[in-house]
Length: 251
Image (cartoon, rainbow, N blue to C red; front, side, top):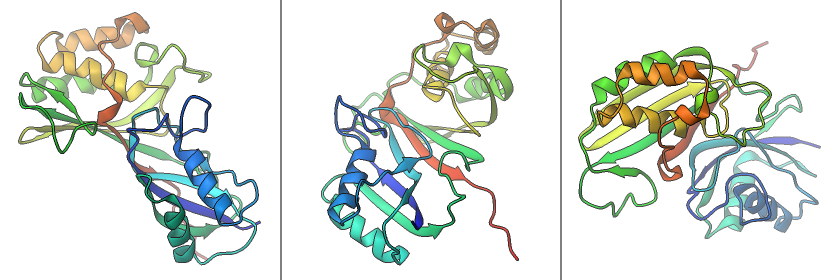
């Protein structure tokens, strides 16, 4: 069966998350139902990351094995035609070898968390960013974030329902930048724990608001105690931005 790599964008506001489940519609379910309407028998779409309810994606990656061969552009157009009007779009579809696995082949995952730092309510960005009224100290947050870079036990920033075998992860990047009233947290690692990004961002916000010092955040990390985590940032501001894979070998 030919295998295809799909790059997908979605607004997760009205979905129960990426993974098919019984408590509401999911992105995976929507894609599988779209493929079934194209004649695919029992399609299984496997994603690179299981985004939570309300989390968005700029470039989620998935793979699917199909009953027949498709030209990539035609498959993309066919799936998008079946998805409409759902806020999900296949940005690219390409044939790949059966060695490719969207989750296991990934070497880096990038997330962006968006904050709008203003008193006025959100209109155009409602459900797509976290509004914070008080001015954030971006320099203090950037200083505190240095403690999170590298290989650590991230138990403090791990959801109690996380099913990962180990709380140890290596955080490769955590950059914080302000542009006007918008503050963006860019985070990269090979893999993340359940709600790790939202937990780290929420704790960094405590620093930005002056409630914690950078030393407080470092102490919370080193405590390896979930009760030391700050407020968990809401799902609406989180985006799965990019998945990196090894470069294709050239003959």
